[in-house]
Length: 331
Image (cartoon, rainbow, N blue to C red):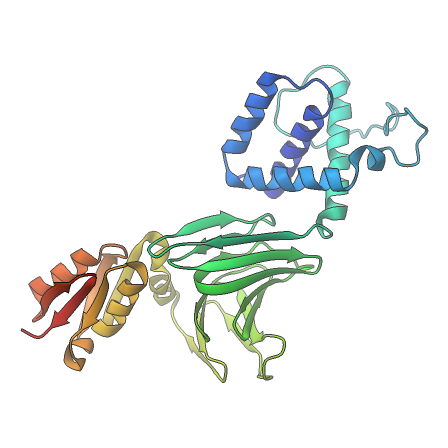
């Protein structure tokens, strides 16, 4: 995977070449192919292009210089320039282009915090989506989830509207990564964790590093909970329960990222509730005896038919369909 620095260098080189007055149809095709290769490239290119425009690039690069004079001279060229991995022409225009790209990055860095970065991502029932954010972080949305992303000067803010999201956070100590879910805030710098929201009930699972769980602004003040790898926290608007689990258990809870649900001694009622999150066909359990029956196994989250078929074949359960509902009853 390309680093953010590499992506920014390559995007800056494309921008300089595009605006140098020698752009061809072949260049456009090559740029399009480069952009189509990954969503991370497209995000960085658009951000850099926006920063270039917002900073009035020609004015910024030539600030304080006489009219018509380029913002570099042969004598002031750096001895070593980090350049994108493209074929190196022999002419000095290459070095000017590379220096201009470096200057663009300076402008970009200076304006990065000033540019609002706001996006909304959502999935339907049964869907899953992976998103690369502009700061290098990655998020994975589970079924029927929605987040709103807003990167501001001192904070990378994620508003979890509903559902469940797994976060892989790029380190940036100057801008904490904050997930807001109802009355809870989960704050991280560089770590991996998931947050699940069901109305005001919030669950946090930490698979790497450490996060801080605290109250959102305006909520009743409560103690801060520090969660390290292996921690599973569940909260409502009044309290927080924290459990420490082996990392193998954490992996089980996060198995949805691979498209599977993993059950180990799980009550049938809980397993049915999980399947109902991923499918339009809903499981309805006939009585409390069946609800408490324990099951084990790995199942495709979107294959509820296979799940109920195996139940009917291996347990004293009668399966009956009524429209979109699947009733589980005693024989």
